[in-house]
Image (cartoon, rainbow, N blue to C red; front, top):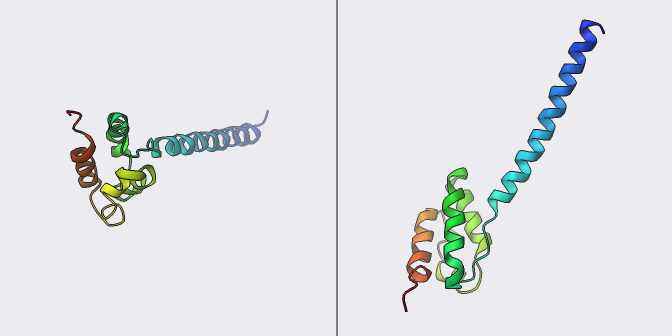
Length: 106
C-alpha cells in the first residue's frame, strides 16, 4: 500500500469516526435535555428536581428555562407561568416550584 493510499485511508477513518461520535453526542444531548414531565404531583417532584439538578450544569440559563417550560403542565405550569416566558434565572423558577411542591409534610 502506498503512503498516499494509507494516508487517505487514515483520513477517511478519522472522518467516519468523527461523524459517528457527533451522532452519539447529539443523541445523548437530546436525551439529557429532556426533563421528566411534571404536572404538580408532589410525589413526582423529587424525581423532577433531581434530574434538573443533575443536568442543569450542562446547559445555559436560557436552555434550562426552555427545558423547564417544556416539562411543566397543569398546576406546576400555572404556579410559575409568568416566569417561564421571561429571562428569569432558572433557579428562581425552581425555588418557586420547591416552595409549592417540595414540602411533603401534611
